[in-house]
Length: 440
Image (tube, rainbow, N blue to C red; front, top):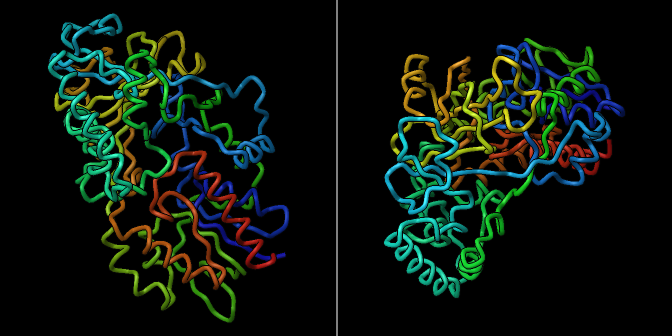
């Protein structure tokens, strides 16, 4: 039996802890007063407020489902929901607006197109349709070239053409990531982007097939507050193995042992922020990476919990410059238990980075769905932004530390873009690697 320290009690750290606890003596360190990280939801005015994102599980893997079923009963409380997304255009791009009925605003010019946008070219005005169709034929000719784009901007243009890039893929993603898409590597969002061929886009439009080739058509959602019920159960299982309000200050390695704030361990599973590592990890092996880690870019999210007008959508994307917000997540449509008698329909308006309460309220006054402010929360670290060297550098760090019994998993530990399912799956795989490599 090994003594193992787990640094960070987000969903990755909690998963690793549960996977190791039956065979090893574990201690989980968490700097905050609550566990769960970005998977948390809280009660706000009697309703469920997801502090970041939708707290749902998409494209759930077999490993993840098996892990979750060992902790909570899927039963009738984890439901499968169909994505029903809309993209709003507010400058007359759409010829036959189908969605005005969802808005009870003076701004009747708001028009929307279902997601994925490439399946609904027929909804745009004829001059826009002609440009997109010409682009798709250029895309088809380029498909003979087997070169894979390296960056997001070149991927979107090569896959969907310049017109759709200018209208949606470019402005929306720049809003979300606050970064130059020409410098963000494609592999950062690997597995999360739709990749239809030109023929498939043409077929979908001829047949008005709304969801064909949609990435993540459905998602699983726990009606008891999303992933929070899983977090609560893991915290309960771990008991006094979990040390909340403990920000680790010093990690050393001596005599084949790891020393975490004075306590000795055989191995470490690091699930906290990579940027902290050069400050708290006092070994020579990390020093060559210090300046690069310090240069890593990231963004936060201001999540604004609101009462919304009734609508049938799961999320609404806002690519235009008319609003600073990039998305409305209609969590009140995920489950009735997310709302109450006072607020019959709730959701979250998302802004990238910090936005003050006064700015929020001014923005809400001009937005669709008549959002009425309830509360908000700013989270500094929500998006780890990669450059062309990030993946290779992080892999070098991991391979340097792993032979010493120091493992890394998690969104900000690996500087990747994970959803809940991917974070759980990566933590499970990390524990399996520990067992295989260390024979523990």
